[in-house]
Image 1 (cartoon, one colour):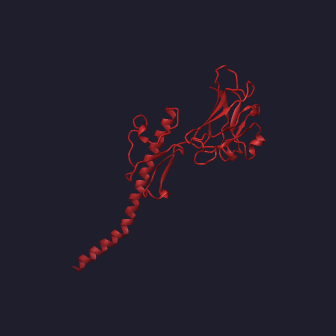
Image 2 (spheres, helix red, strand yellow):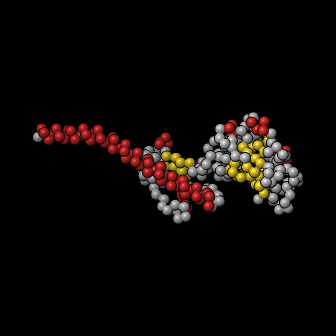
Image 3 (tube, helix red, strand yellow):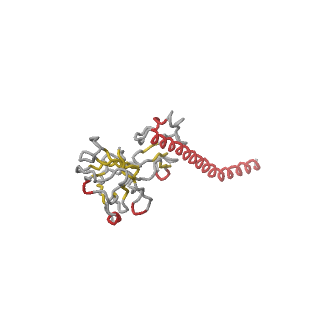
Length: 242
């Protein structure tokens, strides 16, 4: 009987020692599985944005099933994966769904950058007129309600203030005031043209980029656009006709 009690005690000690290791193993395995499944969802969202030629803007990942995602599963803790198009992230609430510190979050959009600049010839007369405008498209949704200013002076662009730097020949004084959209799920800026003048800019050669002194062009999460303060590579984009 004593021997049996000793064996039981030894087993209890071993279980007590091994159980935390086993629980940690299970936890880490589930976290790894969640990260893998989030990466699959990320790739599906990237494909959707590419082939649909628009950004995913809903909150129902089921629309990806079929063309972009074979099967949408729950995370290893039995909860649905969540997508936040405004922030460009998809997430699992992690082991403890009440504590945001263990959320597993994956970005599916590249960092905020100017992707395309288009002269919209609204009256289709092939001349730059006051009814036209410039449409600037970005890789992420923009932080709403920010006033955007521009310059064609590289020196001024390095000072805190201007958001956009146009090439020197662009007559920025003939470009109207603009601000980031008030809607959180829009990734475009519309810049009105104020006069009829074919020399305001030259489609195919005039360019625009994020100014290094930018303080207002930010993504929905408040992160500045590439090119700000020289922290990220800012891409110079040629203005093209639509």
